[in-house]
Amino acid sequence: MTYDTIVLGAGAAGLFCAAQIARQGRRVALIEHTDEPGRKILISGGGRCNFTNLVVRPDNFLSANPHFAKSALARYTPSDFIALVQQHRIRFHEKTLGQLFCDESARQILDMLLGECNSAGVELLTKTQVASVARDTRFTLETSRGTMTAATLVVATGGLSIPKMGATSFGYDLATQFGLNIETPYPALVPLTFNPDDRKLWSSLAGVSTDVIAKFGKKQFRENMLYTHKGLSGPAILQISSYWKPGQPITIDLIPRRDFTNILPHQAKQVLARLLTARLADVWLYAEGFTMPIPSVKKMSDRLHQWQCTPAGTEGFDKAEVTGGGVSTAELNSTTMEARRVPGLFFIGEVVDVTGHLGGYNFQWAWASAHAAAEAITATAA
Image (cartoon, rainbow, N blue to C red; front, side, top):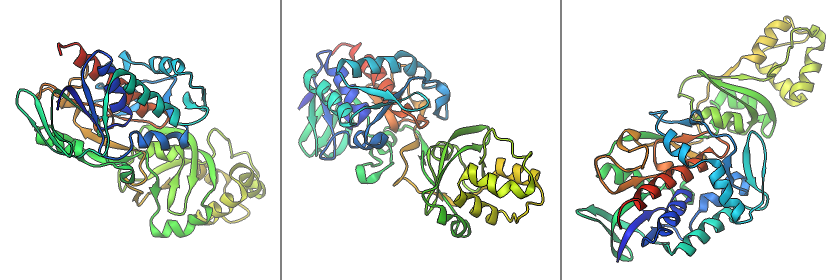
């Protein structure tokens, strides 16, 4: 079977890229090793798909090269994808901080992408295993459906997060086969876990959520933090987890932008209960060794603004929303996503060492990097 382009991975980036290439009259095969495309799209955003963000800046992304994503993001913006969503008459809303969600279901985004692929003539091949990839003048793939060849190969196989949805190391293995370097993958946007002693202290608060500022180094995020049976989660923690280094403490401001120093000592517990909920106030006071009446309101206030916790680790790739690290950006052309040393080989989406913050940024990177590769591929003669 002969194609102009083969795309590996029918997730967000792969679906979007395949449709754009095929729309230019190219014969495109989209290979997916599981039995269903777009599985992670369906579970994203609580089932409503946070498909982009109204405000996307390069500093919303982590990478060994913080400048790499600028070109692709500038050439395919949130407005571009929003226009496609509107064209398909999908209703959406802004939730918080510029995050856009479908009014109804993430299935609408997946159906939109599948519809784009279908109308463009993409040959979607699910339950297809790739045994080997070789390159001479063309790429030759030995698959469970037979031998396939193509002039260009796009790798959109994602990272290691949520293996139960089909995540594998295939993209990294393929990059390594062709001599490309990998930035060590790690779980990102992931809950943090307590050490055994801290778990005994805090696990009774499982389900309690509170507004905080989570800090690590120069990075900080103000959103909700959620106590779990294992540790800490919620948007603020997921955000800071992408920056956290094992063995180091994170700092939590439990009463952001609030002045606690003008409270009388005998009022402290009552006021704290109003700010944090009674359950959290009781456990926090006990854990931090504060007894009533509070001997020093200032000391208590300082501790509330600078509460430190040293996580034991993370909940790993099983619970990580995305994978940090990936194919080194030093190996890729930032304008085209093509491997510098392997003409015709492209890497897009999560498999690349570009990781977005929580809030639709990883989807926007999928759309932008896919668009960059498709634009480059269709600019050349078929």
